[in-house]
Amino acid sequence: MHNEQSSAQGHTLSKNQCPPLTYGLSEDAFLTLERVKNACDLLDELLCSYGDPDQQANFVAASAIAAMTNYMRVDLIAVYKSCALI
Image 1: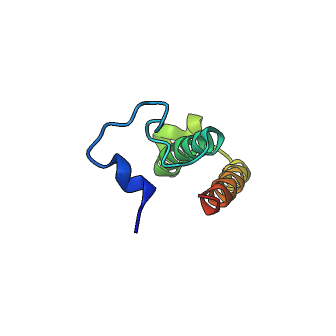
Image 2 (image 1 turned 135 degrees about the vertical axis):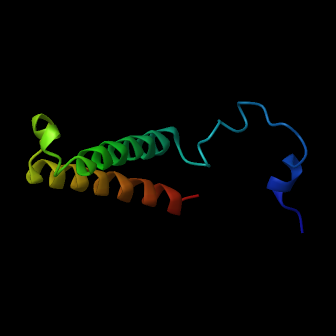
């Protein structure tokens, strides 16, 4: 059984053949995934400081956090659909 992917094993692929770190996703889907990752990092920072009295100036309303998580969900669904095409 011939597997086209195995033909590259042991050989360095040119950048044209395999864009770095895209995992087979389109550029748009990969950038969307990067955006979600960055939003997760921001959300983590916001939630880690949520009850800290020294961080009151950085307070973010629960509705803003909910909007951010909904935005991330929409992005993840789009990337999931792209993965289904691979």
